[in-house]
Amino acid sequence: MRFYLRELAHARAGDKGDTCNIGVIAYQSSFYDLMLKQVTPERVRAHFKSLVKGDIRRYELPKVHAINLVMDNALGGGVTRSLSLDPHGKSYSALLLALPIEVDEANSQILLALGRKPLA
Image (cartoon, rainbow, N blue to C red; front, side):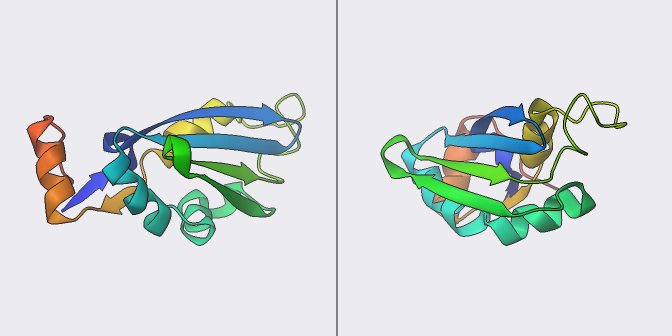
């Protein structure tokens, strides 16, 4: 089954200049491995398309079941310099949580039991 990342994790974001920082924290430890396999810099770049023009670095935080993504040249020059309507990191964290994730049977059953909805 496929679920949006938001069903497996929550995110916190920040921005400084033209750099966006997104922390993604798994709701349960069993979801962390799914994030490691599927929330890769390459996949994040494809998901954000042309919004992120610089490097994307991923840092793994296994003790807290989280990853941290740092995206350079991602905010149109920075919040105060961009002509975009809302180029803040918080907007990007919401966009990232819309990333589809392939979920194995055991974790799918956990998500369904929690009332999470799979993708059609």
